[in-house]
Image 1 (cartoon, protein in one colour):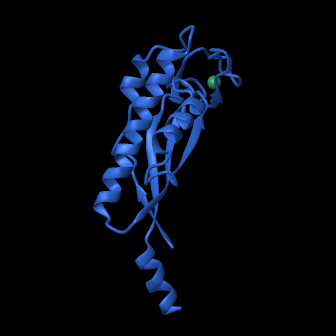
Image 2 (cartoon, rainbow, N blue to C red):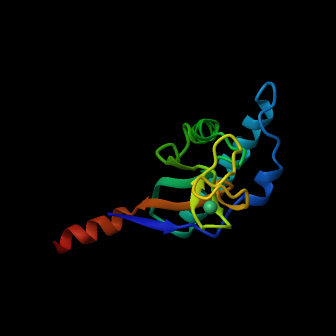
Length: 156
Ligand SMILES: [Zn+2]
């Protein structure tokens, strides 16, 4: 039996992410940025674990929009590197990627934006709003609580 801690709203990087330089020639800047994000995720895991003595974090989930400038692979790699050989090495980082989507101001249709083409596929309008793709946020943290697991198995 695990426990899921909802982390939504507690942490997000939206504003900073927009200012992050995208891929450089070497990719170095980008990787360093993902390392910073991974560090923040790990900080949150540590803080949540500290609030719940005995609970063991097993999974942390983040949502990454394609416009956030974050490379999910680099983020996963950074998180793995940070947690290797630590008490958090069992924590799995789950990355939910979100495509860029717009909603048409004219007909209300929502559509995926590919290659910066923001033309509404239904009515042809060029006026639309971005409704997803810029996300960079924590979703939830899963923890195992050995004591609770004992208690619930006694009951059944
Ligand atoms: Zn439309």
